[in-house]
Image (cartoon, rainbow, N blue to C red; front, side, top):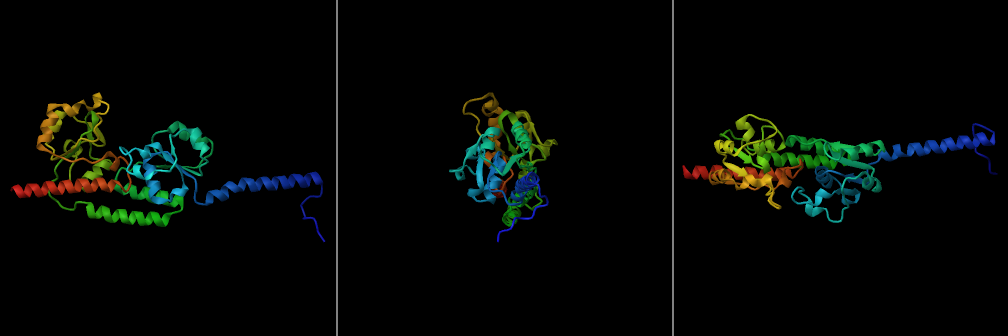
Length: 298
């Protein structure tokens, strides 16, 4: 014989209200239950988080990457993003993707991030890597959030082994390497690029001149530095711009006659990812070739 479920009240209207409150509580608890599960519709709005994400999860869990991920000038994974939706970082577009996790960097798209936070979307901001060791930390942070800590641990171990193999451990005097970009910007004593240069067994203009971060350096100062290696960065000559006028200056031509040229794609060190070690490998090879050449001439 069927029996009614016992409820804490007998009045029909009270019973209905109690059941409604019970259902509402279940609905409110649902997001907490879902939040405990690893995210399955991940949206990345930053070219650096794009690359970290691709290393850690299957493509099925990626709802979208930033459109910059497909630009080979700035992305080391441009050939790997076919078939993945690319976003332009607008709030309307991100909301339409129904993400259960949004990845971004510390800078850029701040109005969009503010809107998404007010709407209650879960957002993880990955800090900019200021050194190669920061990449390992970012990998682990993201791995734990995505529920792939074991894979992140394996990637970090592989990264650490390769980093140790590529790092210069000698005590010979360090030649100056100059990354001379548009408008004369170059590298100081600190930052990711500087750490890569130091690990390769080289010195930066900041080491020689005593400044941190990045700074504009005149061609006259560049001549006095007498760099052994120089990278002119991405050729921003298409279309022609005032920022790239220094490339045609006679003083730079003089520097190029005495320095060995090395071309490292910006995509290798604009972001702190596993691909940063590709930049380190190129610089270390250039340093070793330079040292070997000096020994042969003595």
